[in-house]
Image (cartoon, rainbow, N blue to C red; front, side, top):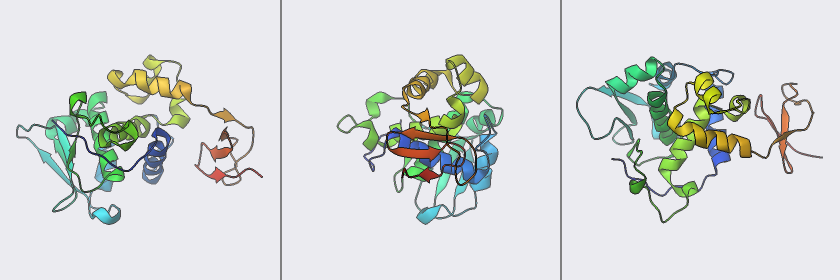
Amino acid sequence: MATDCKVKHRRYETVGEEARKLRRWLGIDAYYTFDITKQIECLVGRTIGQLGVLHLDLFKYDAEDLAWVSFKPRLTLHVHQEIWMDARLGEPKSRFILAHELGHIFLHGHYRQAFSEDNREHLKAWPEEERAEPQANWFADQFLAPDHLAGRCKDQVSLCHQFDFPEMYAADRMSRLKSRRVSCVGEACPECGNFAVVGNGTNLKCETCGTAIGRS
């Protein structure tokens, strides 16, 4: 199984911002669900920051892990063909696995990370904000069901149905959505014009385009 590692401190909200950036870049920020394999295919062959060009390895052989990312000698996403095909068909767990690996690519570097559900493998000496596996799960949470859309869900059933979200992670996602201390301030965004400006303390942000707005 995968082993966890200590990484840069990131809050759940910060990871969500990174997931939202990728959704915007891919042009899927308004989508409740989408074919994640096609989105990954859009990334394959492109240079991902300083990590280099992303390659895709679909394998059939038995392996300890169903999916993982290797950074050397070249950036490669390794995925078992059954997981890939299931994700293409919209199977929630497989979609989450691929989104988790995208989290490792866009949040972490130079560590071989694989999808893992075994909490015993997680590092207990550091908070979740400084561990790679929780961060990758948080990325998957918010890449598949972003706050600006999933916040409208009433319960776990609607979350799973509308976003093809896996049931095993739905309770935690709903809990975080309900605990968000965000309120609409009734202002139009100066960038896109939508009345989607929300506030959290002294910070303002447009939920449509992501523009950060300072209070005067």
